Structure formats: C-alpha cells, structure tokens
Length: 127
Image (cartoon, rainbow, N blue to C red; front, top):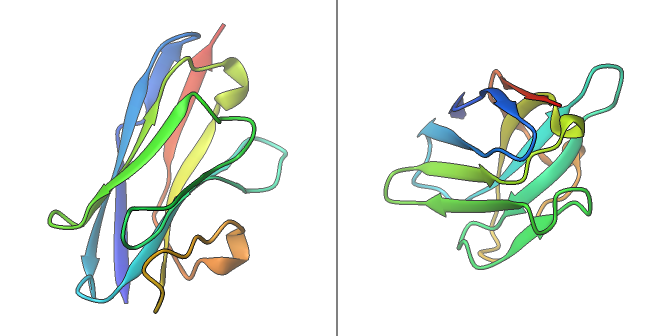
C-alpha cells in the first residue's frame, strides 16, 4: 500500500506558476511509478505528466508540454509538478497517482494504470 498527499495548489493569475508536491508513504521501498492526473469540471480525468521509477523517463500530455515539468526525489519519497505559464484551461483538481512497477524506466500514461491516488489539490487559474 502507498499513501499519497498532495500540496501546493491554489489560485494564480494566467501566466503565473505553481509547484505541486506529492509525498508518498507506506511501501515506498518498492519501485513506484508516479503521475499527475487532473480533472476539470465536467471532464474526464487525464494524465498530464508521468515519471518512471528511475526518474529518467517522463511523459507530458500535449496540452502541457513545454510548460509543466515533473520530477521526483526518491530519497524524500516526493514527486513534484512545476507548472509555468498557466492558462485558465489548466483549472482543475490535480491528483497524484502511483503504481508499483518492476520496470525502472517504464511510463504509465493512462488513468487505469494507477492503483493509488491522493485526495487531490485544487488549481484555479484566473484570466
């Protein structure tokens, strides 16, 4: 089992930046691949960024490519999402997600790949 706690959400003006953090606890000595998933009102959840257990491989949805950066610090059991040049369409609840993996550099890019979820943090971008 893995427990995930997000932090760092809030209200920001368009063009601004936020940094989300996700602290993992529990069976973190095992290999865990991570992702950030968002859900806007009336829309389905979408994986916006993912990172392999090793941290070497990353994935970004086209909608955030070039603006968001995912990273992880395995010594701290923490994953980050740096969000720059935010747009009103980035407004959503952002969830941290995790899944155990046997592959150091494999990416998980769909919501059904993840078994563990945080409670979510609201990001609101005003125009």
